[in-house]
Length: 164
Image (cartoon, rainbow, N blue to C red; front, side, top):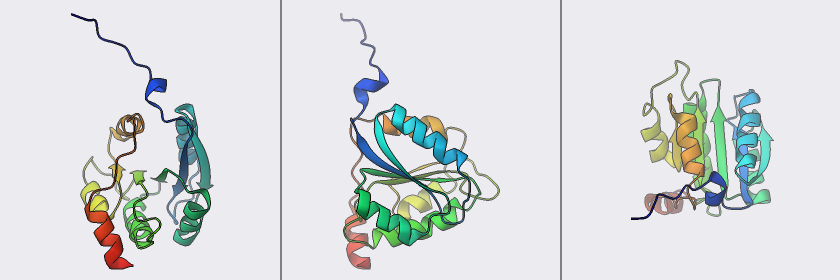
């Protein structure tokens, strides 16, 4: 019987994974973006922080310019659900970005919410994953520690094709 092997975070990282960090268009908070950037860099990501109050069209331009492996959208002001749903619908209409992994998390509603409140609808709209509630940071770290980014659900290419 062999003893369990302890595996460090570094052994699970994909070296130099290109990641964009952004907020939704109405969110002017930046501390959350700095926190996410530092967390991602600590895990080996090459991060481009697009900043706060990013219009949808600018984020689409930045995705084309930087060709990220992952986009992380953060919201603190509570408009993440409304702005995020609009953003992902717009992004998924772009054929070259339709399969890009995009996640969202933070305070997604103005009254706060328990885990699972906004996630189902945001996933249906096209987000790869949603992180909300008390375990959002823990769940996001676990997501980042996966050896590969998950592929998008099969329904997304059809959605993108229908919208194009």
